[in-house]
Length: 119
Picture 1: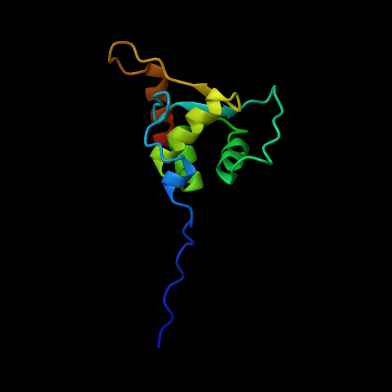
Picture 2: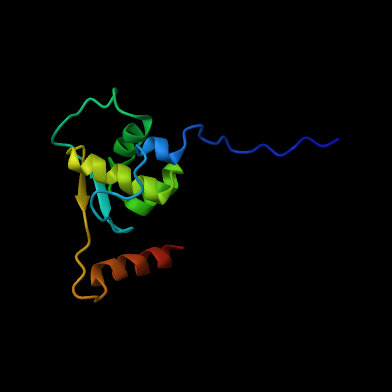
C-alpha cells in the first residue's frame, strides 16, 4: 500500500479572521504597487500578527503586492488589506504606480520586458 503524498500545511486561520472580516482594503492598491519596510522608524512588531511580521521582514527588499502574496502564500485580497493597513500605520512605505489616463507606464513595461528576458 502506497503512502499518500505529503501535502502542504494549510493555515488554520481563515482569511476573514486575519482581516477582521473586511473584504476590501481601505485604499486601492495595484498589483504592481511596490512595498518596502519603513527603515527610518524602528517598530517593535513582536506584539503584531505573524502576517505583519512576515510582510515587514520580506519587504526589507522592495517587493510588489503580488510578490508578497505569492511568497507568503496569502490570498491576494488579504495581502492588499494587510499592506494597506500597515501603510496607514506607517509600518511600511507604499509606492503606487502613476497611470496617466489609461496609458501604460513605460517604466513598468520595461521592467516586465527585462524580467521576461531573464527567464
